[in-house]
Image (cartoon, rainbow, N blue to C red; front, top):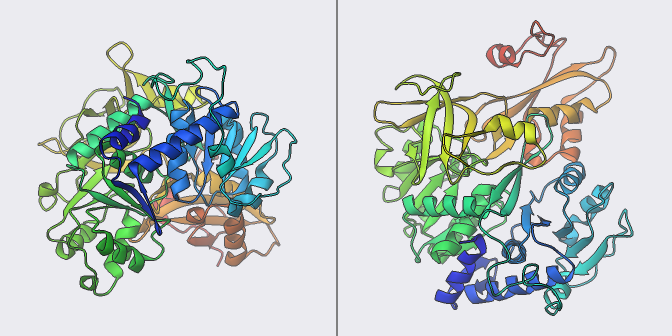
Length: 532
C-alpha cells in the first residue's frame, strides 16, 4: 500500500463522491484522480525521475492537493512549504532538498525571485495561473511552465516501466520516501523529516482507527498543508473515502462556523490557538453545529480550563486530546470518555504504536517518574534529510534488526494506569500557533539589526498561542532601539508566527559558567538588568 493508493482506491470505489470542497469548487474522487494522473504524466514529461523532490509552495487549494498526489504517482517526493515563508528559508530548503521542480502561484512570485540563487538542482517552475508569469530567474537553466500546460502533456514514450508506470503501481515501493516535512531545528536551519510511504500509511491507518472515521465523515481543515496535522486531514479522508472542506486559514472564524453548518461537517481538527478564539466568541449557539461528531487537538496541550469550556459548549461532541511530533506524526490520544477524569493527560499510545518513558541510562522508569519519551512503531520516520549526526541522536537502533526507536527529546511521566502526561521539552523549541519555532532562527534575524549587541529568545505561557515568543535584547552602547523597529524587521524577514509578541530591552543577559546565555534563568526570573 502506497499513499496515493488511498486516492486511487476511493476513486475506484466512490468515483462520483465529492472528495474536496474548496471555496465554490467541488471535486469528486474520480476528477482528482484524473488530474493527479495528468500532473504525474506532465512532470515525468519534464524529466522527473523516481525519488526526485518537488516543492509545493501554494496556499491551501485544490491545486496543492492535486500536486501532492500527482507527485506521488510520479514516484517522486513532495515537500509542502508554509505559504508565508520568506525568501531566505525558501532558498535554504530548495537548496538543501535538491528539488528539481517548484510548483507555485503568481502571488509568490516576488518571494521566489528573491530566493533563486545558488540552486543548481532546480530546473522547472510550474505556475498555477491561466496567464504567463514572466519572472527573470537567477539561472537561465530554469524553465517556466503554466499548470494547464503541464497537465496537458501527453504520456512520454520510450521510457522503461521502472521509470514510468502509472498503471502498474510499481514506480515505488513502500520503503521509498513519500514526503519530506521541514520543521525548525535546534541550529536555526530547518530540518527535513523523511517519511516513507509505509510511515504515512501506518500513521494514517492508526489515527483513523481511534477517531472511528467512516465514509460519511466530512472534515473541516483550516490548517495549512505544510503542517503535518493539516496535511494528514486530506490523506486520512482519502483513505476512508470521506470529504474535506479545505479553507486557507482560521482568520475568519465566523465564516468557518457558518461553513460547518452548511456542509454538515462532522470532524474539526484544531490547535490551542483556534480553541482560544472559539471560546472568546459570543453566542456560539447561533451557529448550526449539530453535525459535529468530534473535535481533535494537537500541536500543544489545551489548558484544562479550555477543555472544560469546550465540553460545556459541545456536550455531544467527542473531544480528542492528542500528542505527536513530526518525527512520528502521532504518538498518543486520550479516549474522550477519559477527558473528565484526567484532562491533563495526553492519553495512551495510538494503535500499532508503543511508548516508553526512560531515564538517562535508557531504563524504563516507574509511574510518576519523569523521563524522556521513546516511541516504537511503523509511524517512526526515517530520520533527517542531509543530517546524519542529528538523525543518529534522535533515531536510534532498537532491539530487532531494522527497528528504529525515536527519542523525542520530550519529558513525560505515566500514571499507574499507563496514561501519559507531558512535563517539558528537553530543548528550548517554542510551540506557538501550532508551529514549532527555533529561537535560534529568530535570534539570527534580530542580530542582523544594526545596534543589537545580544539577543535571547524564549517562549512564555500564553492562553491563546500556547506559547508566546519573547525576545530579550541588549542594545549596543549609544544605539537607540525601539520595539516597533525590531518587530517591523522581524515581520519583513520572518514568517508571521515567528514574530515576537514581547520585546524587552536589558543592559545585560545572564550567562552560564561556560559563557553561554542562561535561558533557564531567563525563563525562571523573567527580567534581569532591565533597561526600560
